[in-house]
Structure formats: C-alpha cells, structure tokens
Image 1: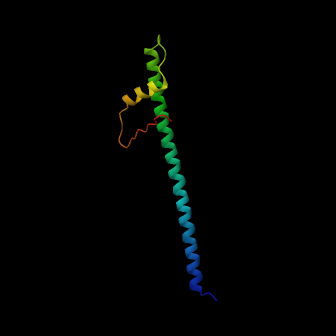
Image 2 (image 1 turned 30 degrees about the vertical axis):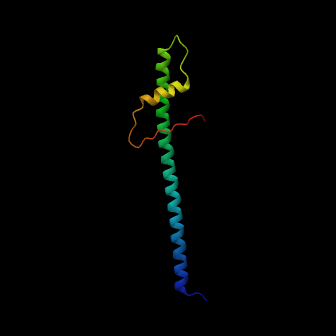
Length: 94
C-alpha cells in the first residue's frame, strides 16, 4: 500500500512537470513567432533596397544591357553598411 504522502508527492511532481512542459511549449511558440516576424520584416526591407538598387542601375543603363544579378549583388554588397549583429554570408559556385 502506498502512503498518502507518496501519493501527494507523486501528484505534485506530475502537476509540476505538466506546468513546466506547458510553459516551455508556450515560450517556444512565442519566441518562434517573434523570430519569424523579425526575419520577414528584415527580408522585406532588404528586398525593397535591392529593388531600388536594380531600378537605379536600370535607369543609368537604359541604353546598354541591364546588369546581371551577380553585378547587382556585388553593388549591393559594396554599398552595405553593416549594423551591429549583422553577418554577411556568401555562397561561391553553388
């Protein structure tokens, strides 16, 4: 036979584990949502800047052949002013 103290301790531990699991899951969902929102915002900003760069290059090179994507990426990278905690990643040949 199990004593009353053991049953109370068991239920208390079960309740504590359930509360911690719920808290962990809620924190994960909240942080993932914030991360996705921030990434979407940053990508939207960068796409706008890249489109503006492409429009400027197209305006300057109206008579000649438009710049390649690689040329636009190089121009954008040269103009980039890195903010704190910003990392540039480059892929070469792939």
